[in-house]
Image 1 (cartoon, one colour):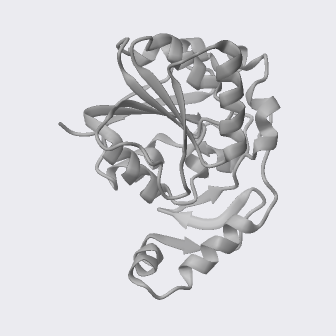
Image 2: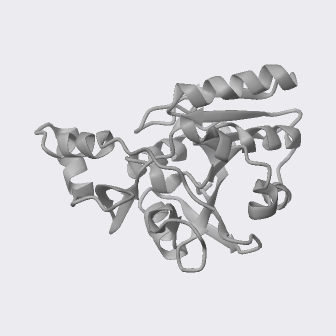
Image 3: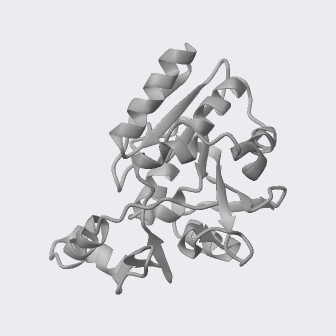
Length: 242
């Protein structure tokens, strides 16, 4: 198993540019993020002691849609553990090819799934699948590196599948997710287990439970539970307080 990565230095260059500015928003970012020499798979941008990884580009669609994903990651078990109501509004953040978006759509026939990504190429692929499968309860939404663009207090569940560790602006993105959640709404993270060196994923594409908890506390999300039923990933649940 491997993770594809974008070799462009653009993310790190943008980070350095932002860190060098002088306005109020830049000053806030200076206090939140630091810069270092990037490691092989990193951007060089550091948040709460964690170097942010490079992103998976649209060229990775084939890998995201691989046939053995069920055997490796058990997405069918993930669906069962989400415990969704048929009319729920779900946001798949960093939806990529929409692999999980369409699984989620089956669980919410009276609700909808919002597939959010910052790459239009990914969303175009999702729209193509949507037309091919004649599915009407999946919507695509183009976000930015700082904002998911979710409607305020409209979402019951947000799911992030191996995506959060790649956010170039994790604090800002999670703050926008917090705003999009209904009071009591949940956030579910699937992240490769950073505590386990035997998990065959590049280190910066894994996260520990401790690190996720620390970063979610910073935006006001409360930890609910950890379910370790997956072969190589954590299933972490947080919620927006009532």
